[in-house]
Amino acid sequence: MSLLITGGTGYIGSHTVVELQALASKQGTEQDIVIVDDLSNSSTKVLDRIKQITHKTVTFIKADICDYDAMKAVFEQHDIEAVIHFAGHKAVGESNEKPLSYYYNNVSGTVILLRVMAEQNVKKLVFSSSATVYGDNVSPLNETMPTSATNPYGQTKLMVEHILFDLAKSDSDWSIACLRYFNPIGAHNSGLIGENPNGIPNNLLPYVAQVAVGRLAQLQVFGDDYDTVDGTGVRDYIHVVDLAQGHVKALQNLDKISGCKAINLGTGNGTSVLEIVNTFKEISGQDIPYKIVPRRAGDLATVYANADLANELLDWQATRNLHTMIEDTWRWQSENPQGF
Ligand code: NAD
Ligand code: UDP
Image (cartoon, rainbow, N blue to C red; front, side, top):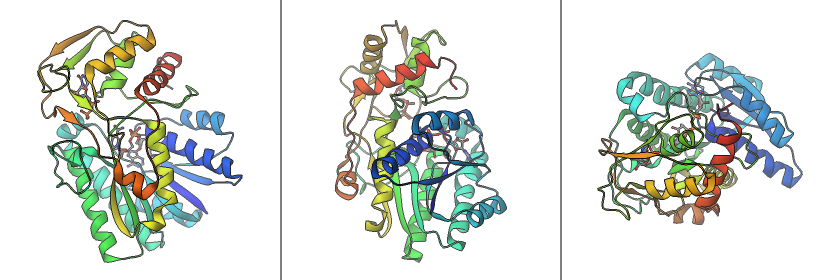
């Protein structure tokens, strides 16, 4: 039996593939993995790096999840038992400019994948949702809070969540973990895989890392007048390997989930922008010039998780601290200054 990982050459997908293989090695078993990715935001170079880390080969199929025939062929040619679905576009700003592209890729693409899964009787799914579905609820955020979204990207995550809840309600054979990620950062400690954004990064950590390595001149800090520890925005940063291990645990515990369950994957701790900058400076030994600029539209002051449910249901909690997250980010960035 194989696991299908859509978006498996991307940032979180590649780390999850490594953790799935690490678990199989620990258990002395083999794990067949099929990655489907259209390479719209990743490269096949990741596959060599995964092999260097795990000494295992995965099956890679270049395909678009929106392509029904191609997805059907994947299921007909491989004995898939469960799917971890990472494939999707993820840039909030771009989603405002190209809403149709986001709704088509993230929502229609997921519906096509689900249709094929239903037809092939594969009804175990782990889905990449996001803390963005909490809208402007006050942190700590827990899974019972009402959801909302403020941009097309967030809407796509929320729409897919609604689709998954309706699907599970309609057919009790489905087991679905809807994992709501907080802010993934860091990289595998080998320095071989990490986040490799296209163009100028939107997210804080890749931006800071590229300033530290000299690719970008200066960080813009979006606002220092929030009601937080130092006036800058606070987020719940989580090591990508902890996040990846959360997927492994979700898969192992899918049988315990009847229907569709939303589960936070965060640390429960908040860190400000300036705390990130100062820790990065200390660990990298590099200067990180920054300038305070006005707040970014749509940003909240403070966002962090209540991560109790993941602990209860999945026996999972994040174990890597901010120092490790930044040390691993810096190793990846300094050893691969231009990415893959
Ligand atoms: P990523 O861009 O690195 O990985 C996504 C992968 O999906 C890429 O390799 C891309 O080529 C592929 N892809 C996109 N559309 C596809 C399609 N139609 N068919 C096949 N492949 C396709 O992003 P990531 O950071 O690894 O994020 C993975 C998932 O987690 C995404 O769904 C994202 O929305 C979600 N998420 C990410 C974050 C974050 O901060 N990174 C936070 C919350 C949720
Ligand atoms: N941020 C910043 N400068 C940047 C990018 C982000 O000051 O170039 C701040 C942003 O305002 C927020 C935090 O860093 O307070 C995390 O932003 P990111 O975009 O990484 O995540 P999100 O806001 O989506 O949680």
